[in-house]
Amino acid sequence: MSAPTSPALRPLARKAPLGASLLALMRLSVARTFTPMLSAAMAALLLLPLLFALAWRANIPSDADIAQLLATRLDQLILALATPLTALLLGTSALSAEAEDGTLLYLVTTTTPRWWIAASRVLFASTLAALLSAASVAATGFITSPSEDPANVIRAFVVAAAFGGATYAALFTALALLVRRSLITGLVYVLFWEGILSQTFPALHYLSVRQWSLAIAKRLTDAFDTSEAAGPSVRAALIGATAALLLAVVIGGRKLNTPRITRIGT
Image (cartoon, rainbow, N blue to C red):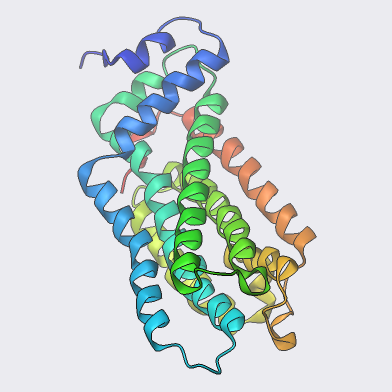
């Protein structure tokens, strides 16, 4: 099979500065990620909270605590659903497509360091997941409470969703390099680990990205009940997220040093 001739790959065919190779890798990630089907799936995930926000706004009781209600809904729909699933699609799609068409095999035969390839994938997926998650929170909050930000809930969850999206995307990018059926494995992780086990066993909160994100939100708003204040601290959340990002790059670089590219896939 002949090597890919895409313009995005040409800077990688020779010894190129890391900055130039990063731009080429980013362009390649964009081309592999924004397919019509994947774009539609991400749009549906991010628009779903907006539809629910329209329904809430029409049915909010006059005596309701808007701040607490908004915090609960943003947690349930965005931190627990839209953010991890969007990050899963972003973290696994580009690598899976490149493994199938041979582009990834070409990339690992260039002079670009393997860890740099992994780092560019983590940077792309994490940045985009953070931006999309934050935008979804901002839009949902504006629809629900257009004239004010009660107890700074919207701003708190914008930061928390961006934090969670970046962390999830890093984990799922590493997962795409570790297992073949990364999309299915990621869904199992989101549904069972984040959705059931970490909610059932409080000790697992310290290993839950959703709980790390909530720790950030709780620091920035007073909308949560005192009984909901338990869980990881902001310091624990930052340490956990940093470790996840570093491990994703290290694991990705090590896996790309091996020839078992066929392990990667959805």
